[in-house]
Amino acid sequence: MDIDIDLASGIAAFEAKEFRRATQLLAPLAENGNPNAQFRLAVMYQNGLGNARNEVFAQQWMRKAAEGGLGIAEHGLGFMYMEGDCVDKDEAEAAGWFRKAADKGLVGSMTTLAMMYEEGRGVEKNLEEARRLYREAGFDDLPGKVC
Image (tube, rainbow, N blue to C red):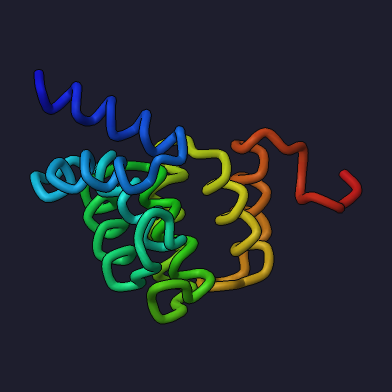
């Protein structure tokens, strides 16, 4: 019960931009394996919110949350790999994490993965797969293309 209260308080502090307080509340939960706490710590370390930017901690916490099955963390880790932010750039690794998040229904991951298939970034170019993902994300066809 206290863990739920601490998580709710930590998330509330995070959303209120009280990042030092959020870190205090979320760090123990993250250490105990809570993916929601891990994800928020990763975002704070990645962006230097309430703490100095720390790429090692950002990557560590994002990976733990992603490996814990949190879709938004899978998406976040995919972006880290796609952009080379806090990790070495690896578009194939990015595509794998976007696929996991897309399989959970995250529209942003579907569209990013579709773009990667459309452009052949990190995956073999495959316009059919790009179209399928864009449609699944709610688009009629490849953006900018005449249907």
